[in-house]
Image 1 (cartoon, chains in turn cyan, purple):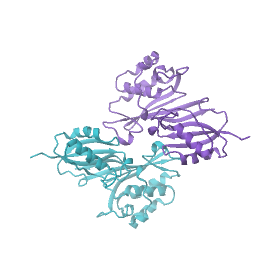
Image 2 (tube, helix red, strand yellow; image 1 turned 180 degrees about the vertical axis):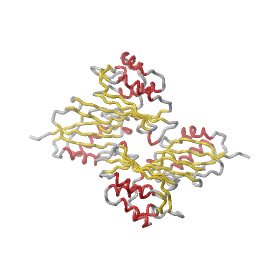
Image 3 (cartoon, rainbow over the protein chains, first blue to last red; image 1 turned 135 degrees about the horizontal axis):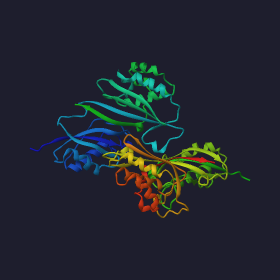
Image 4 (tube, each protein chain N blue to C red; image 1 turned 60 degrees about the horizontal axis):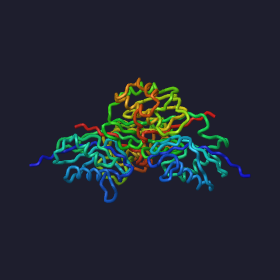
Length: 249
Length: 249
């Protein structure tokens, strides 16, 4: 009987030219490119399972996917071979064999996202693909104050795009930091899991706090409202980057 | 008689999709896009004069150009109006009126370039357009040691692409720093002027020092040789960014 094994990939991509992670009827996705190139490489139909199904335009330095294969190629070699076939805006950072029942969404994990904001009078071309341009004075101290209210375990229903179907909207944010890096402002959030568009809605709400349009302490009211309309707008996709997954197996 | 005035622009661009600054028979350039959009905007034929004619693929956050116009639009407003017409990978950062005889290449200036290197086992897609990927252990201390030999006034003929026609190959480097920023390595150089490909040849040579293929103290021999073949290879264009011009009028 042929021996099948499960391979885990750490996947990095520039989301600019993709319709997100998940396979769609029309348009190229990260998942469809991975399936196409893996199927070619291994000579059998491959379908990956992704850890995070990022939206169109969102980037990743460390998303995760698994797939099963009966090919002999050693797990660690797959990254090198697959990178030869992938377009240059997708690159495997690591490949390795994992237990046959290991599933990236059924295991306890911690995800870190960064959202980058560029502050200036005019957009900066070399930053346009990977940050959200904003021409406004931002009070970083107020954003940091507001962020502190969102750390910990809360019902984040107000920060979840309506229409998303989930059993519970309670999540835990381990840390939510707002850091100045020259003209850039980086919002770094680390948590066990995030609701649909949760990070982008948090950023949109923090930006309103930074512009004096919401008080930092109003974050408590937003959480308690438990409805999307209580929070700020969804910040654009291009500023968001999935930095890494840590798994606790 | 109509009053003509001279306008100075600070120009930022993503060089990825351009054949460099200077107008070419075939292919889009930064200069040709500026001329086209300014001519449309001001309703008269405009030809800009650039401070630095950057190569294909090189980026800028602060290149400089001037042009003359008899249009009434106030100098400071031109940035806003021009940015409406330019493609999104070119953005004017500032526009202002300067004296009619002011010329960006006839005035004492100081230029700062940064060259970004990404060190990793595999390329990182979101870094591919703005940094040079290298899979090699680099001894940063050795690169810093080598860099110190190149600071000051020297004949940089060995670091000049052959074929370039210049009266003198003596230049002054005010500072040449090699700085670690996480997985990135940034070479920052500041000087009065640079020969053709000089920054990229310096970086290519420093990278050899970082890989133990040249001794830091051999920089002196390279300078003394006064021939291109004595130095290292020309590092790729995409890692290079013209950061800013400072003028001493």
